[in-house]
Length: 110
Image 1 (spheres, rainbow, N blue to C red):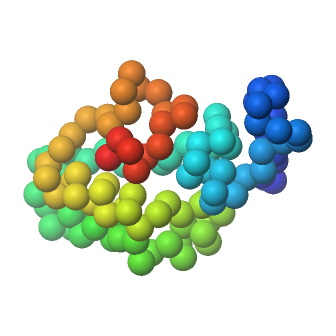
Image 2: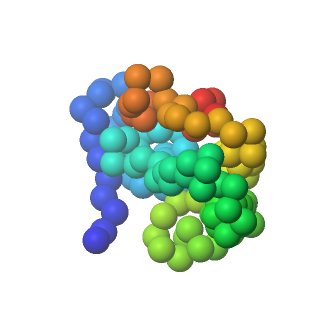
C-alpha cells in the first residue's frame, strides 16, 4: 500500500493535496485517513503483570522505532506519556467527545 495525499476540498488549505507526514498527522490536516490506533484493556486485565508489562511497553516513548518499522508515524513523547498516565490512573472509556477523532488532537484530549 502506498500513502497518498488527500484534498479536503477546502480552498483555505492552499493548493494541492495534504501529504502524509508526522506533522500533518499530528496537526490533524491529514484526515480522515490518519487516525490513532487504540488498544482497550479492562481494569481487571491490567492487574495481570504480563498485561501491565505489555501496555507499558506499547506506550513507552522509547519504542518509536517499532512504530516506524511497520510504516506508521509515531506520536509525540508527550502523547505517549499522557496515554500511559491515563492507564496508570485507571481512566477508562473514550477520550474523544462525541466518539469522533476527526479534527481532534490527541495531546489536547488526553
